[in-house]
Every structure is written in structure tokens, then in C-alpha cells.
Length: 52
Image (tube, rainbow, N blue to C red; front, side, top):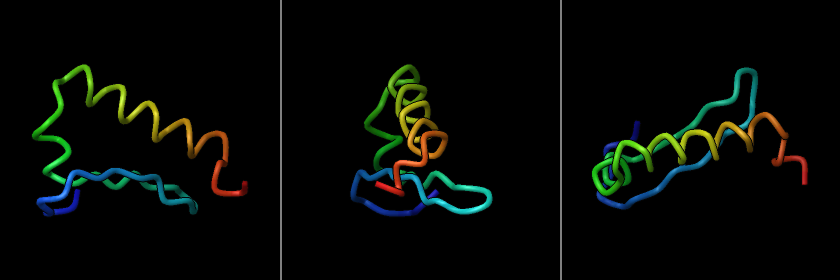
């Protein structure tokens, strides 16, 4: 969680990988949209998109 007024989210590779999300992003999403956001970022980590 990042205390920022800018809506942002990203996956950071590593062992383990991390998902970074700003409070501004969470405030502007519904519960279902948050679930979709986290699933999307998990897919980036699982599929190792940082290698492309």
C-alpha cells in the first residue's frame, strides 16, 4: 500500500513478487473492481511479464 493521491497499481517482480497499490486507486474502485485489479496484477507475476 502506498499513501499517494495518484491512482496506481503495479506488480514488482522478485522472490516473492509484490503488488503495489495506492490508496487513491483503492478509493476509486468497487469491491469487485479491486478483486479484478489484484487478479490482473497476480497474472503479471504468475506469467512473469517482467521478462518481456
